Length: 176
Image (tube, one colour):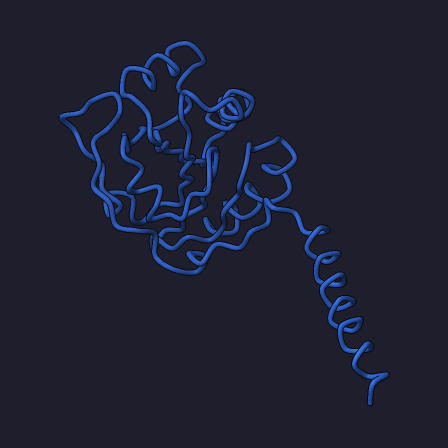
């Protein structure tokens, strides 16, 4: 009996080490979103460029669209921005922005300086819509289908490879 007293803590330690090893191999950008397969959160926010005009989720029904969450203070957003500019030149891809926890003037200055790839950007200064979408940090990008259902979430800057291998094939499939 006394021998088993030392074996159990060793077994527990080995199990913990096993789980830690598995966890260290996971890619944090592959965190599954509970929104996948569910309707995108309802929203009605003012546009960044025209605060008197608003955009609602239901205005986008019937279209396949991407929501890119960004901010002027985000260094990774600057890295991603040329990819978004290239994406905006492709037909069939509707790209909307969500200016997250940012000052309106700072967001507008960012778009003037680096270019504006978006059909429109929503202004979310308190980050409420970002919270509804489960945003961990910026940038993040969501693919939303014609019925308003979230089909994919990408955490971190978009790259040409991610667009080519994951997002654009999914957009084409959703256009079906």
